[in-house]
Length: 173
Image 1 (cartoon, rainbow, N blue to C red):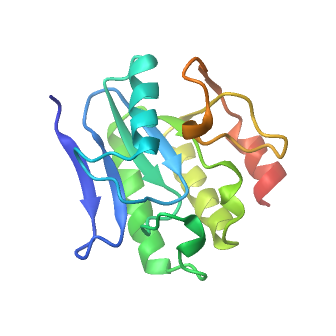
Image 2: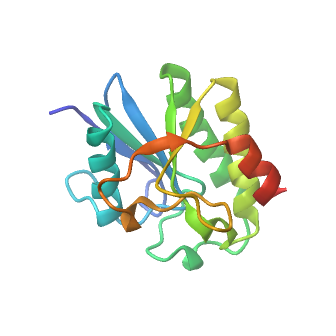
Image 3: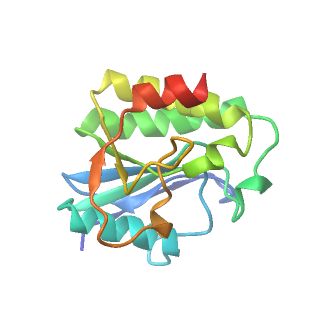
């Protein structure tokens, strides 16, 4: 069994990363973390793990646009905590530096839950550009242009390229 990756703050109200370390991880971005922990994955992370295996990744790392834990994204801060956001970006960049990242976009229309989430995602995209990350999605893009959350898709869906630059221009500016 490969080792767990699990980075939280002291009181566990924030999760920066959760995954299985490997030399070939799939990175997945959701909106915010819920209650999942090593050996106690929720259904979303079970889906991410299954997608990673199906597409021949040895491990996976769940990252989030905003790291505050909440089972419902509507319960996250109403205003961005800039310190928390900067910490999240540091964790993200640490992983992008040491890997050739393939990133699964998986936030759906929840990006509109809070106005500041669009800014957070733009910052993440800027970091991904420095490391030539490949953005992917699963299943069809929504009518509004968003990548689907993996929990609600068929197991038969395959990963395909996701034009993150066009997404930013059409949905987040």
